[in-house]
Image (cartoon, rainbow, N blue to C red):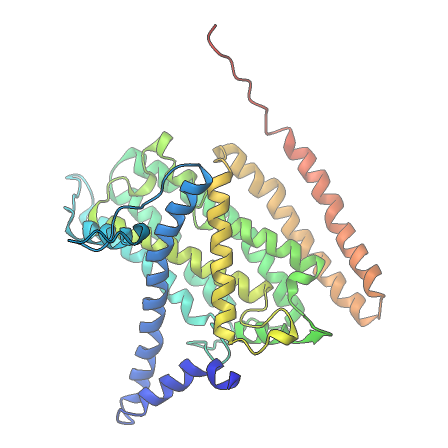
Length: 400
């Protein structure tokens, strides 16, 4: 019964494809992979926008959305009709294009943001036998298409012919390039250990148990450090707080999309959240065992339920961070990337290699853990102490 529930969506897809002529089946199979991804993650985007606003309201001791419900009734649904109202507003709102803007570039920028993000979902394994495209270089493909989002942000800033838009675009590109390096390097340690770029094979490498505990990479010193580096870099790549410098409303109005309204603005909003879900899904695949269970006695739960549960948990952590951590200054953000994140990511590759070879030589597990953890902790303390001098304590003066 557990196996049938685990392969429920795979079986449904094969059953639906069987209704069509053989010549049409490849195309139908592709469509039945694309449509659920857009529907599920599009729906998750809509719900997350409301949950985030309500969660931030709770964290900051204020009310979140609580009014919008079913029209012509007194049923308010605790404000969960808000995303429907926002969607309708985005569709009917006037599309304002600046007179001096490059019309073609201005129009294509939001499309160029959403398309690469959706392509990244095509290689993520959402469950056992539930990967749309099983590429041998799936990880490389994910990072390659993800780099296309930087071009879209530059198109938005340049095409708007607005100084604030261009400044926001330059900030975004500098930030994304800086944090893309530790993001990729943290994933490189996983590739070294598993010996593959295929995301399903990386998950399979973690689908083993010692006693009842899974062999997730996050349960190793290099895996824990890599996961933390990956999550921090993911926040910066998604322009999430405290790395939301490109959209610093108090400084440059709204960043690279200041000249966008209506549905085009909604596409930027959609692309940002879909990108956050995609990179969170990649982090789950690389470090948290993908669709595998943390304990052997929980393997009866469907694999796709484990993947989505981990994804929702990481998104909740992202919301929590946004509500509690203040925004960094531009110089602090770049110093943190180049003087802390990058050296730690490079060091983590060395530790991953040491972990691999000491395992072959049969070191005691406790000694192995302590040695690898010590190699990471000492530079962490030294780099952190050196970076503290850059974070000058603010002195507040009040009028007497």
